[in-house]
Image (cartoon, rainbow, N blue to C red; front, side, top):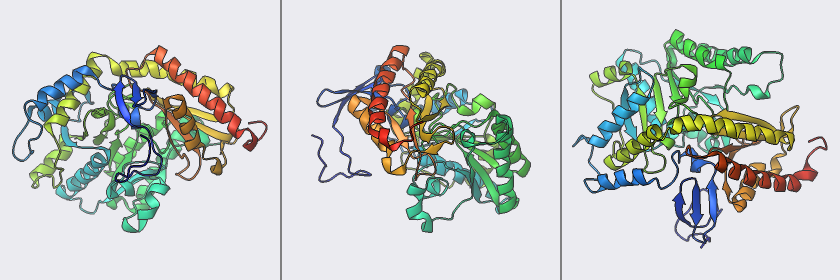
Length: 450
């Protein structure tokens, strides 16, 4: 059955078939049709579907207890998962607070930062600077930090309106600067915004180390990362990395921050952290941040399911799989293979303007003119049309509008970290078939040279 439910509603009217089962990188609907999960859902299923070792460990916890409220009991799964998480993070990130999802993680990170400021006599600090475009979640606090207008605009009158700086979209720049110089230039926008807002009012800078859905796996020049860290330290501003999508091995490191030797003050995790086996997220912070908050009366924040033993048993099993199966290393290796194959498509399809990303967080962007990076005509709705064509072929990919939400088209290709070279070829065969059909459909809408 694929018709609309009379009771359940989603974001839109776009019915899909019923899911029957998942195995590894594959999903099957009730008719038996197989799909390759080329986006790991929403970049969630890092270790693939129906991992028997994870399911066995969850079953063992189910046989003991599925819920124990954190104010009444400590649980071994939550304590053990916290210890394992700290062991996999850069030194200095040594305290963990659990949540159920990415929006909750971002909210928790910002609220911890604010309570730290209050506890240390910096109560004038409340502004959180983020980037445009960006995505940080759908709850009000996270949405106010998000730079994606179609999602934010209806609720703008209900929010504070936190300051934004331009994301480092250097692939669009047409200047004579080197990539290193561009990185510094975009980083200095943070300094300018801090000065404009008033340094004494700025609490934190929140950024995705590798862009997610709103910028399509955007990677800044290397120079950007260290300079933004230095600017935060200069002004006493906390640096928060939103690693909801990048964390748990997706980019070829446990945290994407490790690629640049950065240790943020607070990190938000979710998605691949629980890998779809249970709703799970976390913030990881330094004791330097946490202890003053606890000394001042405690962290005034929390969620009913925070530290749920069943969810934490799933998360612990997921992290053990990442280590025991060397999946983070596989993400780096297979990411190089997949990125090279995607870049190879640029010679065949002139409307592919850019391929970017790190590890198995990869994307390509479609344009009308590669020389100017002019986006495809908005009315083509390429970002939804190519997804539908691929879905019909049995390939699931993820897309969003690239340029702030109203135009531009990018597609995330982010298979589970268990993917093999042979499976990458399966993905590419279906993607090329989809692109060929899409090219035929839009042929008359493009300039001849595209």
